[in-house]
Image (cartoon, rainbow, N blue to C red; front, side, top):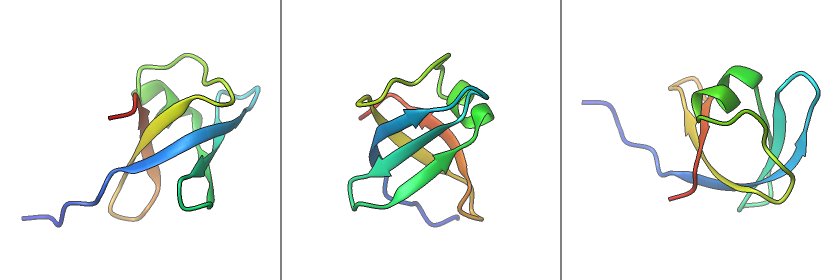
Length: 69
């Protein structure tokens, strides 16, 4: 059974023209969110200041930016 990761909470820092975004995790680390991960969370556009929850693949890449829990 795969190990469960804790949900990462973050605030959108910037949205980029290519559909990707940069978010600031609650621990102070900036993380890039690729456009497919933005879309996977059900978003068309993320706005600066918006709160999100990050899902990650086992290799650490962000797979989705979902509505906060």
